[in-house]
Image 1 (tube, rainbow, N blue to C red):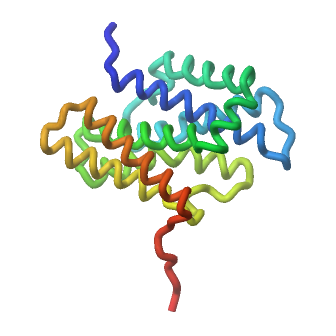
Image 2: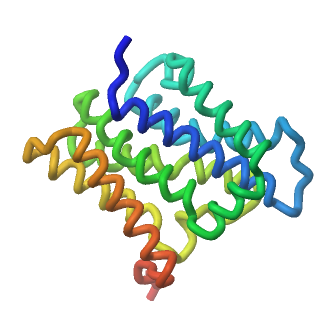
Length: 207
């Protein structure tokens, strides 16, 4: 069976989101985290957004149930955290590496999957965003943290921008793999710039 470039990129996204969630559990000072809780936090971070997307699309069985390789990608990500915790924690904290790469990849692949299911462009962009952010929302909620989407820095908006770029380039028949790379790169770039310069959208006020 042949697998495409986007398929392997998707597995990489699963792995980096697993690493992100597992490290977040290890770093959480208020709770004791054993091996299972660290694995579960990484697991739910990796599959949360994609599962909600699949349920919304009626895509059953959901992707991680249907494809064993997704579970292997989660397991590999978990093992990397177990054996290289200090290295991965440093990369996560200094470069925002795993969260940022994860949302970039998930945004674009989520948008593509929605389009493949015949969903309109507007809904596809929203499902791409949901694919990217919902696993992190579940992770933060489980750990009693404020989810990223409620913090000041641009997060969900970066995902929407990547989805929109993907849809535009798709309309102009851009080569799919190039489109994936360009659109995911936009998400990553916006997110990194927003964090570096502490950028956020204007706060709404009730008059």
